[in-house]
Image (cartoon, rainbow, N blue to C red; front, side, top):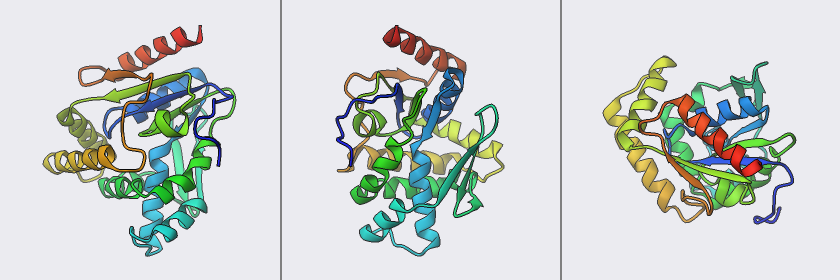
Length: 232
């Protein structure tokens, strides 16, 4: 395993934050603007959870989960402009399936298993290739890419994050209940911030941006400006 404090040879921008803070959308748009690669680390944990369910591997089976994560058969296929990515698990497209709240809740539980995090460490590091990488997750700046040139931590109020997720699910034609989302996000926040393995915290040197009252374009411009400052 690579030394966790290693400096990145390729430019990396990490964007961490809780669920619904906008990090996925912002990261994808920023990567597209820069012409860089994009890592949606949360998708990997959702995929492990989905694969575990399909293969009847219990979430308390640490060894089974670690083996599954290490040999996860996944493929990310981006369209020509890089704005949409289809995700395949064992040859089946699961792009929308893993975005369900059930998969998100499972991912939060899976992410607390250190053996799974260890199995996915090198896979995530491998996304760091030229010309650069925008990495979205919860421990990108603290564990996976601690040597990133720019680290950003996005946050927003629980109510705003639940409302955003509600709209996203509805737009995808998925069932959603705002009250249930508030409860689920609150529970997920609690697990993510208090787990013993790579808890959700602001990385050293990260810039915190509260996106509660900001539009998507405004946040992208803010992060782009920050990158221009550190890369000048």
